[in-house]
Image 1 (cartoon, helix red, strand yellow):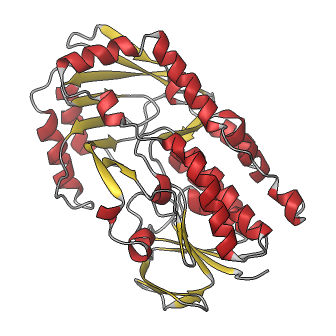
Image 2 (cartoon, one colour):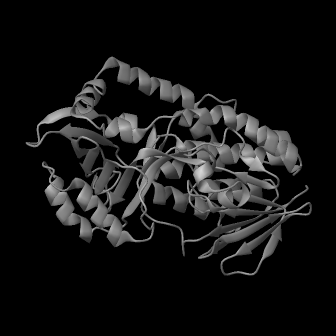
Length: 396
């Protein structure tokens, strides 16, 4: 096997999934993560269809994912008086199985912690791609050289910026921001299963506030041009949310009163990564949201685990010869990643006009919405999933 030493940046979903398969195929794997430990919490994510399930079963994590699943949540749009206007079923937002991002990250980390090197509390500061390997400089640790480097570090990927170019060339703002805050509020007994929940959603032009459910205690979406606000300044971000939703009715005043006391606050833009189907450059490859992210688009986690399976499988099939393996990965994922589409969850969930809100409420109860759900299910399985272990002689 050639090019055996690999570095993965990011220990959320795509990174540990890729680490699992690369180790299985005989690669020496190091994962670097800027957080001091695996990140807990986070909003609910989901998997749908036989393709996602097949990959997760081959990883040996499907049963644990099912045990950790949420009960899904119906999003109920209501007016100022709390009267129900429309409902988005949790079966649409929650796929076949839904769980918290932090729970999935923990499952994947535990699956790989004993076989791969994890370096927490550090990040990549420079990459130099050479004929012999990639020299990697870190914020804290001494520089090291790896045969291959993989960016699994999210929509704001540092690996992509260092290897491909500035974020502004590849990440396109879709005119909205979203915020999640606080622990989810599903119904759950101390020893019982997580049961189906209901989240209360309140709309105003260009704004949506949601309380409860498996996403988070609070979930906000608002229309805005690109904002110049530090990603680590939580106090300023909380003030921004309060300003955006000030003066609205329904549950919003009480939500804003609760906001400063909630933990796990996260604010980011709704954006789409556009790499035109070329996710590799030299000895560097991108995977997950760093390659084909579309915020709140509904397919990101499935794309991450399938992409990891394909990328590692192609490298193993090619005996570590990265040029041909990367070309195959680009070809396969260019087609499959189209499921991320050009959809804008912000525009759908928080229309900018009262008429748009009325149309959204009508649409989610229409037959057309049901057809869209089936289209998504079909798109999630629109890939010929190669049995790579059989091809490269690795035991199942």
